[in-house]
Amino acid sequence: GAVVSQHPSWVICKSGTSVKIECRSLDFQATTMFWYRQFPKQSLMLMATSNEGSKATYEQGVEKDKFLINHASLTLSTLTVTSAHPEDSSFYICSARDGVGEVDEQFFGPGTRLTVL
Amino acid sequence: GQNIDQPTEMTATEGAIVQINCTYQTSGFNGLFWYQQHAGEAPTFLSYNVLDGLEEKGRFSSFLSRSKGYSYLLLKELQMKDSASYLCAPMDSNYQLIWGAGTKLIIKP
Image 1: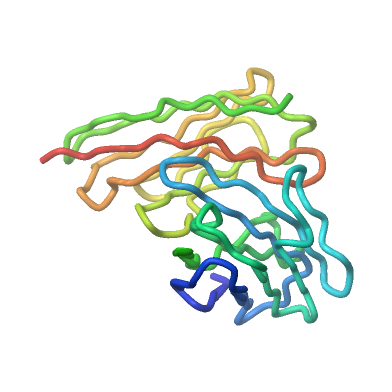
Image 2 (image 1 turned 30 degrees about the vertical axis):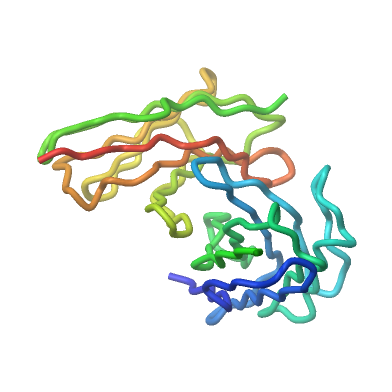
């Protein structure tokens, strides 16, 4: 099956710093990439949807100036958490869709665990 | 609104069979996915149903009734490694997956 990687797997940073998370589709071109956040014992929460070469569509309540998304190519999307605070500590997961298969499946990256001190 | 209803937690015995039910309400419908998520990991794809009926894939089967807004995931010959959360995720008219909190399945020896 299709493979999606994320980097880093985990990161610890100080409050006020910015953190960049990369999401790559390794063996397919992702027409659409999704960014999710998941707090412990809660459901996945969609943060934004991005299509290559266009601005991301953010879900209600997600600050686009705080969570910067860049989908510069068909295989790479980045999420930058700017001026991170402890309440941003969470599990961030990206997924990618190639849009060509019979099943409109989203392939998930392994996730990035962010801890803000 | 859109919502998913699954049991919060279920317990089953190794070697047994368990059925995890899911009812949903979405704006439009473009199929329903089941994902498995182990603690601290990202979800992995299990199955996809877009037509009514049963889809069988090895030890796992998934059923869909669109008119009832109902699906279930059936796991047979349970193994300890099946202990995980199982997420029912219908896809709405915008091709967005709608996520609930999932069902935590605990397998006992």
